[in-house]
Every structure is written in structure tokens, then in C-alpha cells.
Image (cartoon, rainbow, N blue to C red; front, side):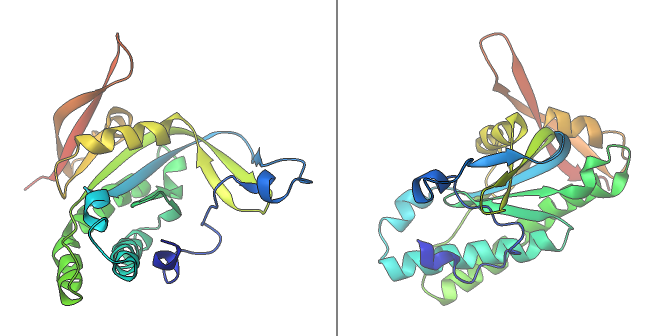
Length: 222
């Protein structure tokens, strides 16, 4: 699948390699180190539905092109909303919105939701291109959440974000409807004060036996 990433439109300064540095560089003193203090950001994940079964039926050169079209199409849209793509995670993209570190500023939070709507709107164009190249249709899910993350710098100076917010964003992704987006409760708390959108509770993610974490769908107000 490395070929699929050859032409992906990811800024070099945002791409994060896997933490396999010690294996490749046994003399390195560390694999990763924290940069500054933990911060609060909105993070997003867009994930293909059922790609494992789909690509199992494709020749390798078609698998590469299948992922390449998806990743590049989504990256172009994400980059339009002042978001930074951190890395690919199999058949998904992880990204975040730097402006949301200022909790009292509206712009970053509105950008996250408008980015979600724009990603949804790419569905028709994405599948038109796939069809032109005789590739299977792609459906996806989008999730967003907001919370504490730690910025890490690897031994080769790549940047990554780690923390429970990213884990939760990944977990709630499966609760989103096909080709739609879902947001976590902490992101909802930041957005509900804005008049542009309306929200509907969409279920919850079970944190443990005693606690659940609500999720919400988002739509524009008429």
C-alpha cells in the first residue's frame, strides 16, 4: 500500500511516521518526546467503510489507486479549512484544527463542522472518479471530538498528537451514519453556543460499565 501514498497531498511538516524508530535506529536515545504542555484541539477522522473486504478482491495496482484517490480527494478538502493532516491510519485520515486551541474563538470550531459538510459533499465527485477508473465505490464515516492532546516530536522531527481525545474520536467513528459525520459531547459543548447549527443526540459510546459518552449529529439551521 505504500504506492497509494506516493502522491498524497500532505504537507511534509504534518506527516507523522510510525513509532518504529528504535528498531531502525538502536542508538537513538528516545523514540518520541513531548513538545510543550498538553493543549486542547478539535481532531477529526475520516474512515472508509468496509475497505478490507473491498480491496481483497482487487489486484495490487488497483488497491494502490483506490486508496490514492480517496486520500488525495479528502486531503484537498481538509487543507481548505486550515486543518493539518497528521497521518494516514490504514484506510483513514487523522487531522486536527490548530485554531481550536483558543477555546474562546469561533473560527476554528466553525471550520471543523464546515470541513465535515464539505467532506460529505465530496462523495459524489469521489465516486465518479473511482467509476472512471473501474474501481469500487467508497462510502465513509467522519467523526470529530475536542479535548486534551499532547504534541509529540519523534526522533526524526516528525510531529504527532496523542491522547484520549484521539482515541475517543476513533471509537465514536463507527456510530456515524454512512457518508455522514458525528461529534463527541466535548465538541458539542463548544459548538452548541453558536446559532448556525442544530444538534441531535445520536447515541453514546460506552466508556466503561458506569459511564457513557454522548454523541451528536449536526445539521445547518434553515
